[in-house]
Structures are given as structure tokens and as C-alpha cells.
Image (cartoon, rainbow, N blue to C red; front, side, top):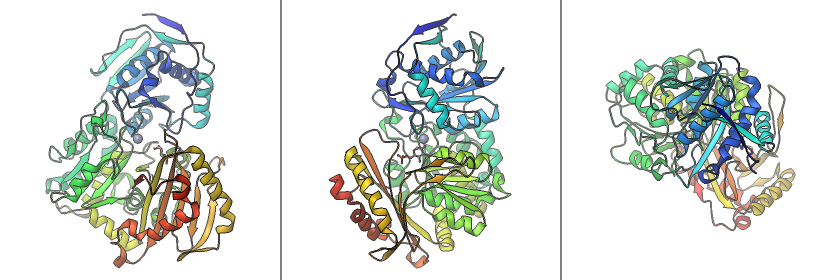
Length: 549
Ligand code: G6P
Ligand code: ZN
């Protein structure tokens, strides 16, 4: 075993985005492409590896995961990393990486995933660095990594043979200790501390049934071990539980459009009381009742309103945080609890400071992300277990249902009808000019009457972080009505083709007699106003959105 120094030249475009470097697998397979990026990570973090301190490595099992891990291990050894913890089979969900970093006081972690993007030889791959609090590296670190990618002339790598990733135990590469760990154990232990497993076991024993669709992604082994193994749900409760390199050809994004099988099952005659799904790397979740997909905004509000049923939150929550386009359902709960509800820009990273400073316990986004201060990533299975805990706390019988919880919540707090309309792969120039024209209209909008609504505030959302004072501007256009309804426009920060315009619509309805309206119908006037104000159809040349969730 020797350490080699291999000459290289920089690749263009290695700037990490919202969630690390995400590219086509074929791009990652170019000789030196992965090595260069990993070299840049190690050069950036070299001051942070204390003696005996570990690096955590794992991914969502997608195509190229195993190859990438072998390269990362050999390069970690060449850079003097003392110890690496790697999930068996190269598997660690994104929340599990965050959990393992925190539990073992690791200096950081490398997550291999492209989240909910399709996988396989023609799909996407991704690599992301997380810091010692278990959360994604802040922008100053990712920018330093990018700067380093642009200045490389060589990378260092050991010529050691591959590590057996399928056997739990310890080996060495050069002076570095490699520990292959059970990917589920630490995470499952944390969940058992947060939730009342005994009550959930009693619920399942009484005949309660659920379906968890792991979408052939990384949550499968976690859900199977916890929900079927520890909580006693019948075998077959977790479906599509084997992580596949191409997710079985599916699009592992838990929303009503991509998790259509689950939705069909929950609409059918054999629907159990609870349906759930999670994404490629296990950080997103969708909660489904019988014939009812719970909006992520409602899920956050409902968890907040019932948080104290879970032992990990029994002493109450300090605050809630939601991204700006997420509905204001959680604000109503915060108000009744007498706690703050923070409104942040889109992106989980904005919650980090609030959680570190103990200002927010629960966080959520409309994009199917929910989580808490137990780790520093959003956490799909955690949200599912929270719902199970709420169901178990209400009743010990098999008849508990998601629908009942949702209806009671609406009756108490009112219903925030909510929907997102996406215009995908729009010409970039058309999308930019649509946003620019909207910005110009903003000053004149306040006070205007649009149909049956009166505009209270029209602005381009800006956020000042209450902890470090940093300012983020141009985070999306808000048109807020006097009655609390809202129309929000923003451009997606994660799309890969052209621009994606997202239109978020929200209307509040206090009257329980009016909680059964079809969502699109309830929002129809706002949809028409949005089209008129932004000239959506005209400027995009589309007759309507490409995806409605
Ligand atoms: C990723 C981030 C989320 C964020 C989402 C927004 O999934 O992890 O925190 O909400 O992207 O995506 P968008 O396409 O709307 O910018
Ligand atoms: Zn994800």
C-alpha cells in the first residue's frame, strides 16, 4: 500500500448547489472528476480532523455509490483521516449520516446522494459534505471547496485494494481505521428515545395497519427494521423496501404524482389508516390518509399541535420554523402555543442556526421536508414515526386514522387550502423576465383589490437571520391578502433543465362546513389572479402547470 500523487486539471462546473454537487452519473464517471471534488473537500477541511476523530461516509445506494465510496476511502487514507465510519453496503440515509456524525462526535460526513432525482447509469449522482453539527456545510465551506476545485494540479490517493463494505467490522487502509457499521442501529436508537415505541407496538398489536412505500430507496432497511422489526407491524407493511441502484426505474420523490401507487392504494377499498412514503435518501416524507394526501404544511402544523405526545418533545417546543412558501397553518399553532414561528427562505440550511440557538424545535417545508432539532437534516422516517406516535396516543385500537387527526385539526385551527403549481423546463429568459416584471408591479399592488381579495402586502421576500444577522434577499415574491390568503412565486433552485417557476397558493377557511371542497376548486380564484398578475400562460406559452401537488 502506498500513497500516490496523481496529476490532474480542474473541471468546470464543480460548484456545489443547494445540496452538494449533483450531476449526471456519466459526468461523475469521467476520469478524475470525482477524485478532484473529493480532493477539494479534503483540502478545505484539513484543519478540522482532530486526532482519533472520525469521518462518516455513506449514501442512498444509487448507481455509482459503491465505486465512489471506495475512491473516497482511499483518498481519505491518503489525506491522513484517522478513522472512517461507513455504513454496511455503503448505505446511510441522509438523516442517519447526520445522526451518526452527532452521536460519534465525528468532524464531518460525506453523503452520496442526488436525493429524489432518478438514479441508474443514465440518472443522477451527488456528493455533499456535512460538518460536525451533522448539517450540510454552510456556504463559506462549499465556496471554499469550489475555489479549491478550480486550483487543483494533483490529488492524493492510496493504491490499496477495495474494502469489503458488506461485512461489519474494522480494517485499515494505510494508517486509517475503516469501521463498517450497521447503518440502522444508531438511528433506530435515537428514534426509540424520541417516540413512545411501547404505545406504537400496542397500536399495531390491536390491529392497526399502515403502508410505508420506501420507493426502492434508502429508507427501506430503516423502515423495515423499525416499523416491522421493533414496532411489530405485520410483514409487508413496508413495500418496495429493497434499495435498488435505479430505484426500480422510478422517481423516488414522495408526492402524490410520483408516489402514485401509494395514493391509488390509499384511495382503494383496502386502504389502511395510514400511508407514508419517503425519498431517495430518506429525508423527505409524505403522509397519506384514506383518500387524503396531507400537505406537508399541514403535517408540520399537526405535529406541532400534538408534539407533547412524543416523549422526546414532552416538555414542549420552543418554536417552529417554516420556509416562506410553506402555508401559514403552523403560524396558527405557534400563536395558540404562545411561541414564535420563523419564516425562512427555501432550503433546510436556513433552519440550522435557529435549531442550534434553540429558537426552533420543529421545522418544515412545503417540499415534503419535516424535521426537528434531533439532527440537522430533515428526516422522513422521523415524521412517519411522529404520526404513528400521535395515532397511538389517541387510541389503542386498530381504528385510528390519519383522516381523523387532520379533520380535528382543521376544525380547531381552520384549514389552509394549499397547492403548488410547477411550470417546469421553461425558457430561462422567459422565466427571468416574468419574475422581473412581477417585481416591478409590486409597489403598486399593495392596497389593490383583485377579485374578491384585497392585497395587504406585496414584496420580494428578504430574510435576516436572527442569530448571525446575515441577510438573504430576493427569496420569492409574496402577494399576501388581507384575509390571510397568499400567492407566492419563486424560481426553483434545484431544477436541471431550463427554469422551473413555482406558484404556491394558499387560502384560509375557518368554517368546518367548508373543509371538504376540492383543493383546486377552493383555490380557483387565486389561480386566476396569479395567472393574470404574472401573465403566466402568456409568458411561458403553456396552457397550465406541468405538475400540480
Ligand atoms: C432541496 C432542499 C430543500 C428545499 C428544496 C427546494 O430539497 O433540501 O430544503 O426545500 O430543495 O427546492 P426548489 O426546487 O423549490 O428550489
Ligand atoms: Zn432527499
